[in-house]
Image (cartoon, rainbow, N blue to C red; front, side, top):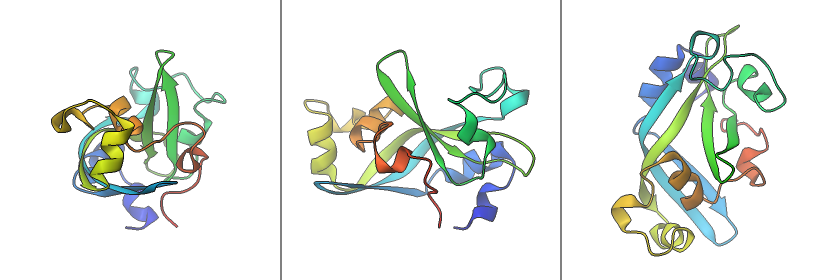
Length: 147
């Protein structure tokens, strides 16, 4: 996939991300998942979007170049992640809401101890926990997912 894939309408991109793979290279191994659920946020048009009120230090990456992963903290305890995707001159992204394990299931289980396999990655915060993605992870430092 190249950047032009993410330079489309945010709603379309969020739908197309379903079935795509996301890879987390951790200190203990590789985790590969297939995205099963997304949610689109179209920025200025969407009051539910984190970027609805404009650019802040917390939302700045969403206004930038597509292909970055925007990781953010919610409810004082969880991380979630958006793939920055929007048409040129717009703002938006797709929230990654759920996935199924493809590789590294043992690592995912270790990251979410005691949880049944069917609930390992079935929510946005569960997904970041399972893949060890936080504000401190390499994937969250505004590095492009696509090179």
